[in-house]
Image (cartoon, rainbow, N blue to C red):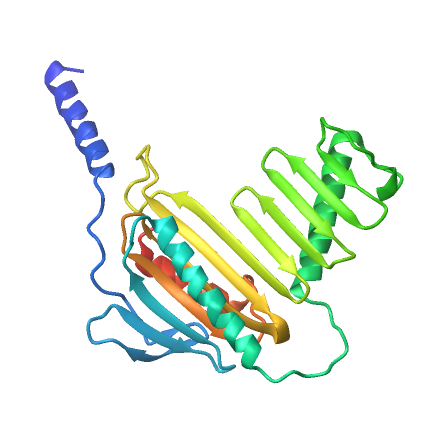
Length: 263
């Protein structure tokens, strides 16, 4: 190849890499379609920075641009604190209904933690005869006693589950679960590359999920995405019924956030 062509090619590559490292301009307004799957838009702010959706079952989704104060993580911490306080107030004011106990998110999390512990043991030493036969082994970092308590400390995996108290704390990479009785919180945060920055060595964006289930299947949570410098696109979900990450409604929420979040 001639030197001139080499210079042109090199210049093009350098320009492309420079463009990939350039932060995209902050979003000034949201794209709020009238319909997104099971979500129907019921209102939109005149400045284009927020809109509200509802479902036929009564769930409400508020999509908004959230400015970053301090850091993206601190901003999300503050949002979670507000939502948690809101959920506690709603639970305190709700009428108490005397019903028979039913399986809740916490016991599901505890069972998942127990199964993860068993899988970790089997993956390291093969099939164990029973949970009580698994002793303390520092190299594995797995303890399962005969009282239903599980402790796992492995690279990237930390689990504390107690069947007797119906509680569990799970951390697997960016996934965190805190469950107790009929209440459970699920939190996921991870750094990602922004759209148009596939070749960038720096992950300038963030994606985050927060789900909080409280007594009586009341649900509050959010899905968030955007540049770490802000603003973040956040969809806050409120529902009197149980909503899971795999539900159609939650998939619609994720699509709205991805449409506006730029990641």
